[in-house]
Image 1: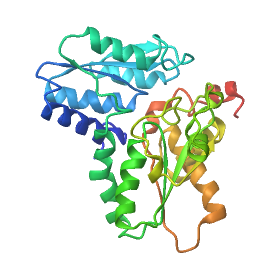
Image 2: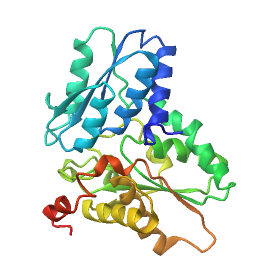
Image 3: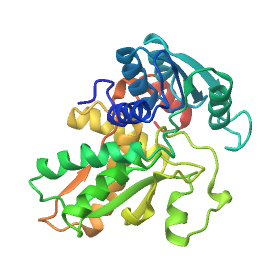
Length: 290
């Protein structure tokens, strides 16, 4: 179901199909998107199948593997500084919008605010989890970035059984947890962090706080070390935010889960994206994590 090795493949396809149906993406066009890597891969594979060109804008904190993979499938990749405000003209949000304005016959999916993102997981991932657990799921845990994955799944599951509890995994340096708890967008919560794929310094339209019951924050180090444990102890060669989701879910489970509860943890991507970082002992030692 995920040919690009991440949960983003299905939403990428849905965004493109919906754009075609709405006349926003025309034959021979160029898809331009800001991405941490996985959405770019999903869009790139869809573009190859449908004959579109692709330009992806990434921050310089994303792994080299993600950049190289996108170039390998024919995409143009533009790198921007991570330590600038979202509205700074150098940010990857701003550069993607500018390139869209400057490029004829181009389409900017804007995965953060494009509700086709959430719709894809409501239509596919949610039902897969419900049927896969035979309706026994009581708790959902997933990282929150654009919000499409967790909110699409959660909306579907809560419609099947209102008692399903949804735990959003956030990271230190992101605004989600405090906003959920206080309704305040606190810029003091925003500072650089290393974990890729979760957390934001903006409030995407795809993040529906009404279907996320609670947030828990996980440090970069705890997420990285848990990801390595998943590979070595469980044989799950997964990405960094997968370890973050697992660490946060286990923290919650120790205090709150009952013996007959069923928790599903979403593991969004593959470990090959992080060979030069969290799976590299030298890099880990440089962070002081080993």
